[in-house]
Length: 255
Picture 1: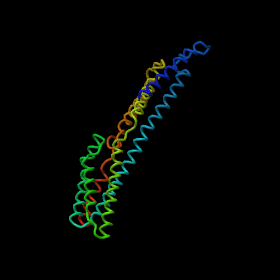
Picture 2: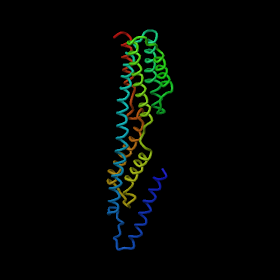
Picture 3: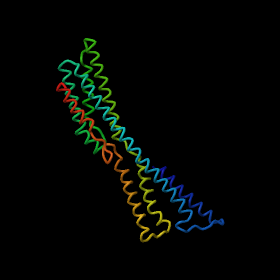
C-alpha cells in the first residue's frame, strides 16, 4: 500500500516540476476549461476509470460463474457417493448415507448463511467429511466387491472434499482493495473534472453531468455489491444442494 502512495506522490511531483520547467520556456498558457490540458487529462481519467470498472465487474462475474458451476460439481459428487454407499452392507452403508444427507442439510442451511455473512465455511462440515473418510477406511473389505465399493466411495469423498475446498476459496475471494479504491476515486474525479478545470456549468448543461454522475455512482456501487460470491447482486445460492436433497430422498425411497 505504501508503494502505491509513493508512486502517486512521485507522479504528482513530476507534474509540478514539469510545470515549473515549462514556465521558463515560451510555452503557451492553458487556463481554459476546454484547453488541451483538460482534454488530455479528461480522456486519460475516463480511460482509467473504464479500465478499473471493467476489471472490477468482470473478475467477480467470472468468479461467481465458476463458483456456481463448482456447487453442482460438489452436489454431483455427493450423489455418486450416496449411490456408492448403497453397495456397503448394513449398518455401515445406511449410516454413511444418513451422514451424507445431514451434510447436504448443513451446507444448504447453516453453512450457506455463514458463507453469505462471514465469507467462510463451517468447521462442522469439514468434521463430517473427515469422520466419513475414517469410517469408510475402517470398514473391513474381505471380498473384491467390497474393496471396489469402498474404493469407489473413498474416491467420491475425495471429490467432495476437493470441491468443498474450492468453495472455501471462492467464498474468500474478492477483488483487490486497491482496484475498488481506484474505481471510486477515478469515478469521483471524472464527475468533478469540469469544476476542477474551472468550468461553471449552469442550467441544462447540468442535466447530462448529473445523469453521468448518477450512472457512475450506480455502477460503482455495483462493483462493491458483487465483491463476494455468496452475497450481493450476483450471489450464488444453494440451488444445487436443494435439488440434491430431493434427489437423495428419491434414491432412499427406491426411485
